[in-house]
Amino acid sequence: MKLYNTLTKRKDEFIPLEQGKVRMYVCGPTVYNFIHIGNARPMIVFDTVRRYFEYKGYEVNFVSNFTDVDDKIIKKAIEEGVSANEISERYIQECKKDMAGMNVKPATTHPKATEEICGMIEMIQLLIDKGVAYEKNGTVYFRTRMFKEYGKLSHKNLDDLQSGGRSLLVTGEDEKEDSLDFVLWKPKKEGEPAWESPWCEGRPGWHIECSVMSKKYLGEQIDIHAGGEDLVFPHHENEIAQSEAANGKEFARYWMHNAFLNIDNHKMSKSLGNFRTVREISEQYDLQILRFFMLSAHYRSPLNFSADLMEASKNGLERIVTAVANLKHLMGVALKEEMSEEERASLVQAGRFAEEFEAAMDDDFNTADAISSIFELVKFANTNAAAESSKAYLGELKALIVKLSDVLGLIVEKEEEMLDQDIEALIEERQAARKARDFARADEIRAELLEKGIILEDTREGVKWKRA
Ligand code: AMP
Ligand code: ZN
Image (cartoon, rainbow, N blue to C red; front, side, top):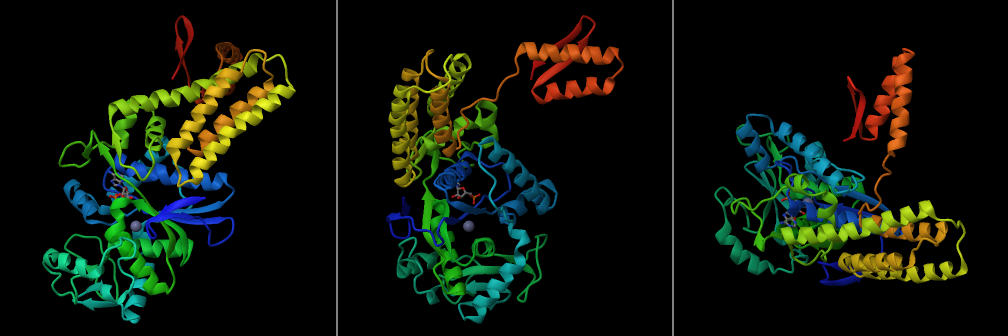
């Protein structure tokens, strides 16, 4: 399996640190609002990477943080007159709802920065003890030039950075020994959340959070560290400097970055007013369509969000869903149970599409080509499945489509709907229970039906029902 490594700038063969296991860290969102569809891209992409590793038999320890202390959260809290914690907790919950809608699996661990402050203070102290960090007036800085490999991820040269950095010095930062140095700990400002530390009451810098959470939940060395391409510099570059200076070993072997999502060929930003949240999209489309759309392009190519592409994704997904429903229908009416020799041979042919799917995914997670292989398989199933096919053959074809779609996190098999006659039989049983004054049973039936999306209405003309 090959994946593009930002560190080496080429597709590298994936060799895990420990056989059969993947330790993976994905930088999560800053929770001050509903997540936008740009944030959804790394979530969907790296959830798919995880699913593919699992499909290949790896055990994946997948850690993704919530950045719950940040200037934007504090600003929003002040605007609303509530605590920063209330804002971050609210949007963590909303984010989890959106993730569920997009069929993004919960991480093995979702650490929150504010719950890991002790570990951050420890790592900062270790960096001071090693001489690679220093304190000035309560602020702790990392001595960037002491980390000889600084720039290895973003392929930047320290001297070029230095000339750019001087003009970028912001007020209050002139106390730094070097314009390249970055903040590990900063003093609190009035009204901000703060923690006690050996240097001052304050809060951590953003970069140290991920170095610490990754170490705590995955160990000093991990296989894959991932996020959007805007994080390469300075966030990930600084994470490498901190972690490698503190632990004395290579931090992550593979660095993966997704390209940006644009809207109608423009960068998505609040100031342009073209900012779309996942929640807004969910009012218009099933979020499965958003997932399909995200995976229809390679994760390292910029992707443009537009109504046309969403419509195309809707049709694409529907094609797979319809094929599965059709196979299911044929299974229900099939007269033969056992597979014939020809059907067995035909399944071997169908297996080739699964091989193509894997070849695409093995080549740096080319989900666009992987979807094409599913389409080929769907076409094959549509052509070969017939009224005289055996149930076993139809079942195998269906299982293969469902399995490959599931690797991409696409749900293509609809839940069984209750048949009208079954609903009516239960309603009759409920009426009988009421007559016999067995109200417990009557309520039980109402609840059972509700769970399956059937709503009952007691009217003067009798009981009426509808699907939710
Ligand atoms: P943030 O909350 O800004 O820290 O972003 C959380 C994640 O979303 C990071 O991995 C970002 O790189 C990623 N991200 C933010 N905006 C976009 C975008 N427009 N397209 C793709 N990824 C994005
Ligand atoms: Zn991070």
